Amino acid sequence: MTSRRDVVIVGGGPAGIATALFLVDAAPHLADRVVVLEKARYPREKICAGAIGARADALLARIGVVVDVPSAPIHGAALRVMGRTTVVREPGVGRVVRRLEFDAELARKATTRGIEVVEGAAVTAIRWVPGGIEVDSARGTYAARALVGADGVGSIVRRALGLPATRYHAQALEVDTEPVADDAPRDLLVFDAGERRLPGYVWDFPTLLDGAELVSRGVYVLARGGVRPRLEIQEVLERHLARKGLTLASYRRRRFAERGFEPHRALSRPRVLLVGEAAGIDPVTGEGIAQALFYGATAGSYLAARLAEGDLGFAGWPAAVRRSHVGRDLAYREKVVPLFYGPARPSVERFLRRSPDVLRLGLQHFGGKPWSRSAVARTGLAAAREAARYGAGRMRQHAAAR
Ligand SMILES: Cc1cc2nc3c(=O)[nH]c(=O)nc-3n(C[C@H](O)[C@H](O)[C@H](O)COP(=O)(O)OP(=O)(O)OC[C@H]3O[C@@H](n4cnc5c(N)ncnc54)[C@H](O)[C@@H]3O)c2cc1C
Image (cartoon, rainbow, N blue to C red; front, side):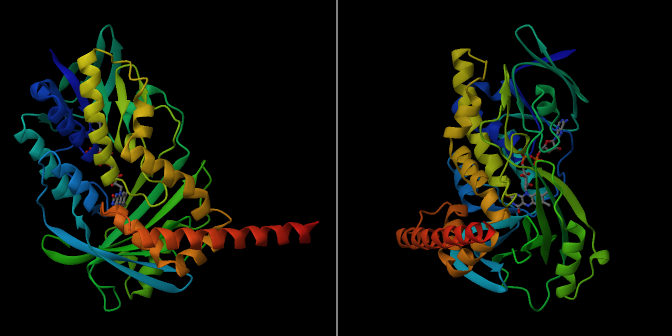
């Protein structure tokens, strides 16, 4: 038997559930016409450090959704570059959650709004049929007018669309350990970008596991265009833990891939669109939870409008993403990848070390706060100075090489 719906959403992570919530908020009559098919059963684990900017909570609050789960509150960040650590405090910019709890509670919120979330429903096949789409899942076949691929980095929906391979692939490896004496205060997110050969960074985030105050420690490494980074991720984490007096082998390692966003790439085919990590998230830091939720908000209103018009070609979806909050944010971050992880890195490091305002602006963005004007002005000036210095250095190098 085939179940019929208007919209089938594959994947019940933040992107899929947010798409359902925002769609039903924009078009309440669709509540029983939408189904989310989730492969796992809640509470289900997602390998993730769980840092969520307050901008994401504010986004959900706009439609009256509050995800109340145990959280470690964040009031600032520390950034280590060139052997020096800069600490910037900004109250209330976010929290660290356990995805096991956050995702289950978010899915529960959707069900309380009448949205059907089917667990244990791994999707195995997708077909375009006259007038719609059909998907086979472990819980039966569904027919829909439209399909949303919210099934994360290994997206079966993305594969069905036949899109080209992504340029930005990252790996992240993490462990949860006990705190140690030289850890930063527990309300800070700590980023260590001190290893210049690493296209990525090491993190220490506070986390709460079954009520115990632990620290999520991990490494994010970006690979571009299939080029393998020169450093082995496990060795980087091993050295980081050793500096803290900890041994990697003593902890359960959790490793997972991430997909970075590329502007101007296809994200849809007729009747099918991609959101969240199936589409692509921040390649610089690997931040993806807030992005997934913002994708969902954009997709929800986009779908409501297209369903009302009966226009399900979705040719305009990539442009709608580019115009959206998440699209503009991701396009900017993609632009700075070569700066952060390319030959200009020493200059970028100098700039970051001298300009704590950059970290402040980043935190304000993370927390959904307005940028402080003086910080923007000082950052602009410092960036112009560093760019001039970098340019002059390059000219000297060229002259010497001739
Ligand atoms: C180690 C690590 C640390 C990270 N730390 C952070 C962090 O601190 N902060 C942050 O913002 N981001 C972080 N991220 C990124 C973040 O976890 C993801 O970007 C985010 O989860 C993307 O959300 P999503 O809903 O698009 O995909 P997912 O959360 O991956 O959800 C996809 C869902 O689809 C389901 N699914 C998959 N295939 C199928 C199928 N065939 N049929 C049905 N269902 C299917 C999955 O079970 C899953 O529930 C981290 C990532 C890693 C790997």
